[in-house]
Length: 98
Image (cartoon, rainbow, N blue to C red; front, side):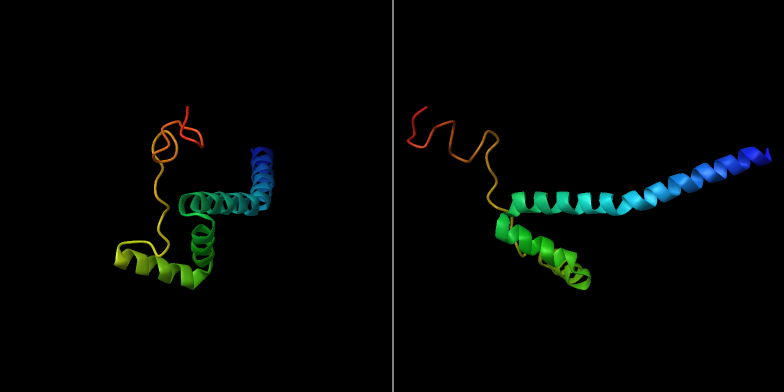
């Protein structure tokens, strides 16, 4: 039993070290995915400013509290596209032809 406990402890430590090395990479991947989603939803300038302010620890928290109290975003989303593409395009090309 003592050898089994040592092997389990060794395996747990090895797994723990591996996870410690991968957590910063996972955190960076989540941060990049969040920024990309925000930029797509709000546009390049508004999405970048919104993500930048949210990244600053106390400024982001204050911004989010103010947005909740106001009931709307400081940097609103772009106009939503229709289900099948841009609003009003209806499958037409640049000159209005099919």
